[in-house]
Amino acid sequence: MLKLYSFQGSGNCYKVRLLLSQLGIPFQVVETDILAGEAKTPEYLAKNPNGRTPMVEFGNGNILCESNAILYHFAVGTQYLPEDPLARTRTLQWMFFEQNNHETTIAVARHWLKYKQVTTEHRDRLEDLHKGGCRVLGVMEQHLVSRPFFTGDSYGIADIALYAYTHVADEGGFDLSGYPNIRTWLGRVSSQPGHITMDHICS
Ligand SMILES: N[C@@H](CCC(=O)N[C@@H](CS)C(=O)NCC(=O)O)C(=O)O
Image (cartoon, rainbow, N blue to C red; front, side):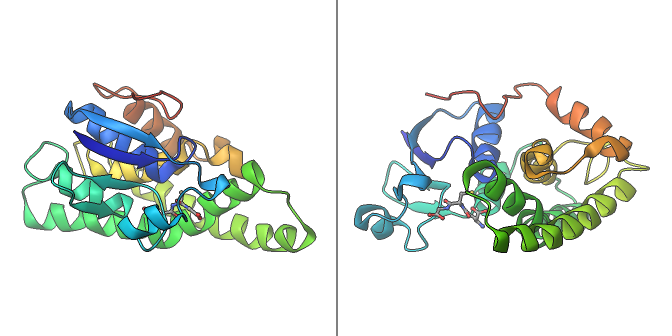
């Protein structure tokens, strides 16, 4: 069976658990405690030299890493990835945005506040992360003025990628009350068929 090396509290890992659940693909979670260094053991690094979760291991031993690449792999040929070439490329556009701008601000602030002792050095950088994260939320808010989902009329992997850390942005010190379109979109995403919450334990 497909194995997913996953840390429960990670938005990147949640993305994959969410899509696999919505697709009805059976998978076994190998809970990997990144805080205890379990993604940095020699055995883990032999499979993924980058030492990160999520990581998927197929039955034939093939390995796939990087949350958004994993989403793309499983979404090909399904309703979660548009067929139209431009719409498909726009899906990728938002997924790159998520990794370059969203994850590097909102997810990092959340990681520090949720899992680390915040030092003076962190506090200074947190201010920058908050500025950057608010700019990112502004871009999302604007995009959602006239669309229900990131790539138009239907829910797909761009929404999953962006939902993962946006719906827990408060844990990174972000207040979503000033972003009504984002809040409405979060509700739309969480009411999709087969949705699971981040704390849902997949066995
Ligand atoms: N770009 C990667 C980021 C992966 C990543 O940073 N994973 C974190 C959890 S969110 C991790 O496993 N960190 C392990 C460590 O720092 O030891 C992805 O989207 O999969």
